[in-house]
Image (cartoon, rainbow, N blue to C red; front, side):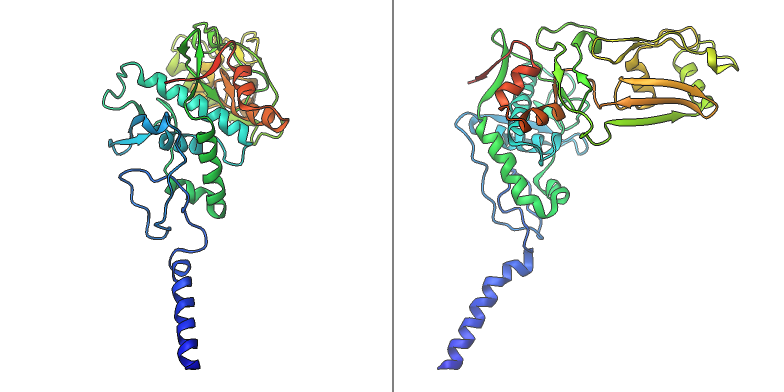
Length: 337
């Protein structure tokens, strides 16, 4: 009899440990189930939906995956989970993640409210140069490793806590653009895109040296720099004496390069950024025998919400509504049916 009991107990223990042996201690058991996506065999098949609110769970988002060309149907909650996970570090403060969720929801709703010539078959795409970045739970788990469950729940909670909330200006959804980091001030939309937008005005932003790669340096050999400029502006005059290539620099109110003539041709800071792959248009330029050196601060276009600034505000106790109304001038955070 004793031997039968021991055998039974051993069998029960084996059955209890079997899932851990097959799937490991860290799984995606609390990640949102994305329709049409199989959970990999190395992960737990037990998944629990995001705690969706009454508005977002009723909204359907059609998402174009630009690499595969496939269109996927998601609820807004599921889509926002993937956007927040892709666009903002999950280690950020919860209130910053909430602010990102509201900005991302606003951006998606605005995109979906008008015809999109870039991808008429879908409301949004996962190409960050067109819409917003997006990551699947499986891909996020690879990035997060042992922190997967904690970060997954954290982002799901941020999305659920802001259910249905969006940003409006005078009753209309705003273009809720955002960027990574800046130095001291955000940019006016007119400085970035040439058009003034009442809610995209310069405001203070508190991030700084805590930001990874806040200061970066790019050096372009003289010959390479000259060739790149001449390809874009054949009329530029760039002789052997590089010390006379550049004219006087002017800056925007936010501290980015507004204009820096080269070879007698006007060039904006944004042009330099695009041409030489700089992280932002906030840079100081020097030229020497080794080449043209850009010393760059921050990352992104600089207009709208700074993500690292939002995190710094959250760290000092500000809530997501305060963060959003700080970065987007004159907006209202409201439930959008």
